[in-house]
Every structure is written in structure tokens, then in C-alpha cells.
Amino acid sequence: MLILVVNSGSSSLKYQVRDTDTHEILTKGLIDRIGESEVPDHRAALLRLSEEVGQALQEKKIEAVGHRVVHGGERFSQPVLVDNEITRAIERLSPLAPLHNPASAMGIRAVAERYPGIPQVAVFDTAFHRTLPPRAWRYAIPTPLYRRYGIRRYGFHGTSCGYVSELAAEFLGIPLEEFDAVVAHLGNGASVTALQGGRSIDTSMGFTPLAGLVMGTRSGDIDPSILVFLAREGYSADDIDSLLNRESGLLALSGNTDMREITSAAEAGDQQAELALEISAYRLAKYIGGYHVAVGGARAIIFTAGIGENDAAFRARVVALLGALNVRIDEAANSVRSNEVRRISTADSAIEVLVVPTDEEEAIAEATAETVLAAGRE
Ligand code: ADP
Image 1: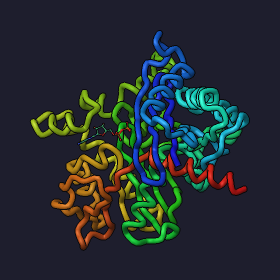
Image 2: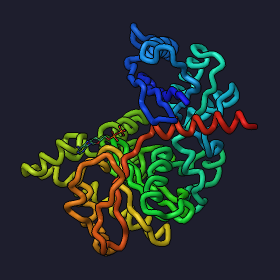
Image 3: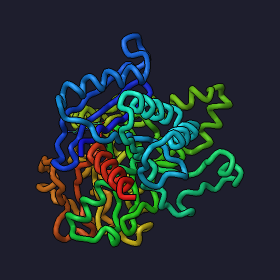
Image 4: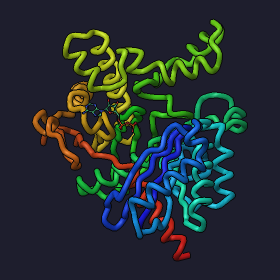
């Protein structure tokens, strides 16, 4: 099936056309600066997209469109075929994802206008974490805050997490329903997820993608009283939002967001860069230890996304902190560069350590094709 995968951001739109039979990427592109004069809105962006895609595909036709949607709230636990009511539901969740959900809804409407009648599927970043038990998703704050505002842990990176966990279970020859593991998705945004029987039972991101690990520009976990303190010092809500989401994390600690540059700075003796790496690895190692307990003993630790797949030195740093769990890295295997699923732990390591390249677009294309085919059978 030929699937157009659309990732709508507030000012950009990324797309790929995937063939789910051959796993080929037929074309891909990025339309950015939406809102500026040349591309005033998502409709204009979609028009440009359809021209680019039309030229690239020639006589071939797109059969369905899959959208990455950041927030599915408590309602969506799997991909769904989109209709007007679903689009409105995505919009209603905007308070929970103010930058992302409105853009997704606009993207869906623009596709409906440009490709009338084509089936569209929404694939939610939160859906994979709908299996979290209350002990993991409930915050210890008064219940009305949950009821009124939906303040609870949702978790993100679910599409990637589901995709790599299936590949990892297959690689190890463990049925997915019996697969207990810890997945570390380490990109610009980073999260860790505890898998029990192939399902998410805990995850480090929370009400928003700010919680948990140290990220490129996000603080991850901090004492919430720091926010109150800053508010009393005169910081506005927007100041605090920007401070924690865009000016913190690796950037604040080292002056840089790119792990390659931080690593070379640290190697050249930059103490701040070294500390940034130490803090990040330490936080992640504590989460892995905690989730090993949460899942009742993980069979595997999975590294994925930009840093997880490419940064051998950072993986080695994290695994070195897991000595108490008898996890051991195989230095030679760890330093191999590859796009394949691979084991990087020693034969006597108590837990297997794997690198599993993620591919969110592939996962969205497959979910879209499956959802459309299932709807056709009904
Ligand atoms: P996003 O969350 O934007 O999808 P990615 O998964 O592409 O992010 O990851 C981006 C991060 O991956 C960058 O911060 C970069 O530091 C890191 N990265 C990419 N390639 C390498 C590499 N060869 N070595 C170390 N880090 C890398």
C-alpha cells in the first residue's frame, strides 16, 4: 500500500511516502516556515506537498495518509481512522499539547481538502502508554486536578517504543507477550519506558514531554518547588515554560545540544561538557535500575534514536553504571556502526543490551495500512 506519512508541526510539515509492501521510501520532504508569506498556512503547505509528491510519484497514487499526532489523551489507545468527530477530538486535546495537536488537526483538514475521499489514520504518540497501571500514571495530587484538567502521566515516544520492542523481541526469539525490557529512546527528546509482557507499564515522560531524562534543551525531572520559587521571583508562566523546555538540559549544562560536539568537548578536557554527560548518564542509569525492578527483571535494555543508535561512548557510560545489575558491555560490539538490530552486551551479561534502530515513519505507515485494511473488512 502507498502511504503518505505526515508529521505536522506548528511551523513545519514533514512527510514521507512509503510502500508498505516493499518498505521503500518513494519520496520525502520538509515544508517549513509555515505562517510566513510563501506558505501562509497548513493548506498552502499541503498544496505544495501534493505538488512535490505528485511529481515524485508520477502516475502512482497515494492510497492512505497516516498522521503522527502527539496527544491522544485518555481516549486513544490505538491508531484510528479519522472522521470529523475524531479531528474535533484531537483539537479538544489541544490544552494538553498546545503546539502539536492544533497543527495535526489542521494537517488532517488540509489533506481532506487536497485528497478528498482518501482514508486518513491518526497514530498517537501517547497510545502505546495507555496500558500504564494507575500506580504509574497517577500523581499524588488532589483528584479534582486529574478530573478537571486531565493532569496525569501520559507518556510519549510510544510509536517508536512499540516498533523497537517488537524488533527486539523478535531478535531475541522471545514472544512479545512475554517480553520484559527497558527501552531508552534517546533523541533530542529522550525517554525511558518499562515494558512488561510487551506492554508499557511505566515511562519517564509525564503530563508533558518535559519530565524524566536530561534532554537537548529540556531539564527533565526537577523539584517542582523550583517553579514556584521562580514564579515568586517574578518569572511568568511563559518564562518558566521557555526556561525548562528550550534553555535547559544539555544546552544549559554544556552550552551545546549536539552529543557529538559535547563528547568531543569533553574529550578535549571541557569540564562542563564532561559534567553534562555524567548527569545525563547517571539519570538514565537510575531510571533503568528502577524500571528493571518495575518489570520484575528485564531481559533486555534497548537503546534507540539518534543518540541511542549512534553514540557508542554514551551507551558505554550508561552501561558502566549498571555494574550492580551485572550488566556488561562488549566494547568491540558496541563500537560497530550499523543500521541493523544488534547485541552489544557480553555473553555473561545478566541482561542483554541491544541497539535497535527506530523508524517512526515506517511504524506509522504500517499502522495506517493495517487500520485501513481492518476498516475495509468490517
Ligand atoms: P529527534 O528527537 O529530533 O528525532 P534524533 O533521534 O534524530 O532526534 O536524535 C538527535 C540527536 O542524536 C542529536 O542531539 C545528536 O546529538 C544525536 N546524534 C546523532 N548522530 C550522532 C552520532 N553519530 N553520535 C552522537 N550523537 C549523535
